[in-house]
Length: 453
Image (cartoon, rainbow, N blue to C red):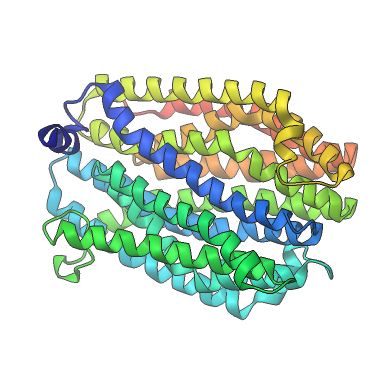
């Protein structure tokens, strides 16, 4: 058994059959993605037990900003991780080690600057997000905990998870993320309903999230210390800086990843901002839907995260058969899960949204919103699957083009257009409409610019 574990870690990129290699990489990534989503939703669930829709709306408003911290992690983690896998595929381990150290320090620096900026400009940011008189105080409490205080450990945890996956250690990456999530689920009710007085439930949720992210980060640091200085991933500055071409390659993939994630969250912010005009109950309804719909999407992201190092390594090694086999299997798996989710959400929309809402009017809107939004799930998976592929190929410019086109040319303009033409439900239909166009473009780009072996 011990020998099997050792072999799977060393040879997952090269010798394991594609289905087994993908399972080894994808299952921990999917599990961690679902736990992350569950602990994000746990705050909404527990806040929902207060039966205060303004508290629910406030936590929903902060979610896109919290997700921006994850996009900062993607800049260093995905940019560095994709390059590390390609360098290992080319047998350039020393350069991969230097890239790993550079990525860790880059992620920490960016996270510190973002947390400082959020702390200094809290009020204008909350106003931009659409926080009103009834939600501002709760949004401020939550943001101070999860972004200003907890931003650095959150980013470092996600950078380390991506870098661990890049060297085939998807299991350790998954455990670290899962640990933080499980702790958050356990600590939420303790801080919200036991330790904090009535009226400060949102603050309690924020403290629980911050503490769980700090403990998750500590786990990653302990694993890193146990791996030792000989590991490809290390904080030790003595390994030196990577070559300029390598640093440029980190940014070439990392920046498009961060921009795409930022625009994804900006899309959510704009939905919230436009939905505010239809009242706080509509805002609370769409906030819950934007979380519930993430289950199949996060599974898709987990598939992509596990797939990326395998494709990057084998593409760099010139192994076309293994590269194509990984892409086909991962894409099929994602589409099957997306199709199943559409059926389940259509049938059980009211029951799912009812886990977080009790007001009948808000519940009715949320159920209908979910039944519409879920139709875009297969399209959304195909859209970001293509972006992940070009990140694995090291083609940052193409992934940036796809991300910018999807959000700035299609999705976001479609929100304003359909809102103006059809009102509240036009906002909800915008995702399906825009991603249908984007998938057609993505397919053409993929077949036109994918690497030729």
